[in-house]
Image 1 (spheres, rainbow, N blue to C red):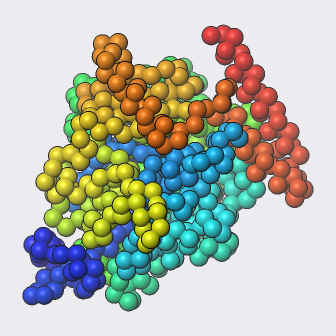
Image 2: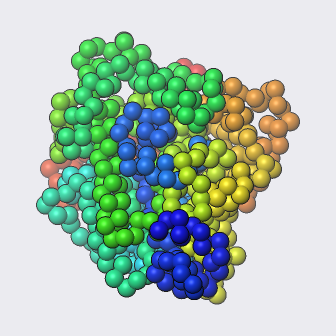
Length: 601
């Protein structure tokens, strides 16, 4: 069937594609438009997948990589909702309403143009365009693009939905994972609902997706299914059977893991042999920890690996169901992580540590199970992002460069690695071309909308081109003050504290993806040109400067105070007053820490 569909694909015109006929290639029988599945992992490191050199068992995602193309130079935003907003619209996140996440947005920015913190209707979504062209559309899992009636999935093109509305939630129970929110917000068909008694996030999201896909298949229309997994967002939780498979695997520590993954990534050709590896000054020496600390830290990584494998197993169940329905061969898959691995560890911040220990078990042995709380922190995040530098929240490659796989596109090459620069804004134009739908030119159904800024990856997928972004095309990026500008093989980057120094730096990503060798002095002219390019990007997209003294953690604590702790206090929850006091003390602690750091500098 597959070869037959591929043979006739080049002869299909737009009218044939839009007809939605059954698969086949007899005379006058063009194959049906493909079904589309987008799988979004949360906070996965660059080398977590086996196909990218990781030691975690991900056989189902690896199989998709062999069937299609994995991308070694694919970029997103450094946090979840800006990436998801671009993934669904093909528009820079400052222009679709998500210039920053609500949880980390300074008060001075909220409500300014581009900074609503939710996905606006000025950018039409892929789901809307597919639905209007005859596709059935569904979403399950994490949404994080708004939870008011006008910002839920039903208003953004999804006919069926079961979503978690905020940045995350517990994976076993109906409760929030941090005091950022007063409760966990779940919606089905845009109506607030609870969860079943038996629940695990990755399993449930796939179960719902299969249910929606099976229902959509009854009328012969193609489907678009988007699954936003919570794996591996904190709290890191997984069924015990998956966690147990990694007992002892990480006893050698984060530095050993980072070096091993670097070697495998080089062997796979994902990064150049001999590329530099940056050792962040904040990374602790594993051998300096006590035996008990090493044991506890290793168990965090075991839970992380178990959560990733559990998600991969859920993907395997989805694939098996599509095969049983006879739809797998005509399904296009896109897999990506929304950003790099997460350095946040609430257990290392006194304020959140108190809240976590009041609500969760944090002992070493049962990590991953119901009622437990685990987070990897910056040390394991650095290892899982190997051989890249940095992690989530920042504009280093460890925050922006993520694994991405596309499989099932008719006529595409298989088992290949695409090394060309690519971007999350390229996904919408790619899937529109695959579905035979013309990209809009800034107007959709008679109304003005934001223009798509990405490029279709189909020429690259089918071997007709080795890149889709010209060497002189500038691609800008900014989030919470950390920023970057990509142009050809080069990257201009600025990171705020605590990861960066707030200054611009220049790197050659082809030779130095680990950002180990700063070229700002040796290539001063290029450095100056890229700074001008970034200034133009910021002007064109309405990027706002960060307020003086902006602190990411302090801003998140303020959000927790207003959206999580105060509502709980009003409900007279037993811990409400204590949580309020903890938040106020936490803000004071962060201010004192910042003052002490400035004095020391």
